[in-house]
Length: 195
Image (cartoon, rainbow, N blue to C red):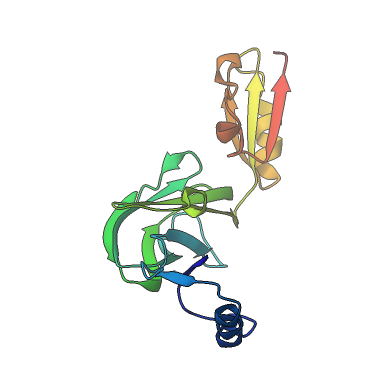
């Protein structure tokens, strides 16, 4: 006896011929039709960020999504490790198939910034690994220098020289040293003096 579990779509071989041969040999054939359709799936498939960004200028970021059925979902957008300030999330109904989601954003500080989008469907989702998409972009601007000085007031001449060289300089004391990679990413260069 043979039990065939199939959606009925032949992909290779000769099903009718094989069934006739099995009948000649006295093999009993039964089948179970698998017609439940594709499993529920929601995925982010891409992110488009404008190629020319300016610090302080609002822009629209576009996400691409795919769903196997109409789905209610929340899309969250992050700038680095923080929620996107202009539009941190959006609740929407995604149609079956491919769709595009537009979200507003603005970057206030020049330099590299990583955008991360996460889609959270309200219903079942077979593969959660494809619910996140990240892109890193460079926002042009003057290079930023973090100058950490051990003795307040000693940085004046060096700070002026850096500023004259078209650099944005931020001076901090020893307690102002960044404690995370995310905070340090906001600077292009780090100077530690007498600390």
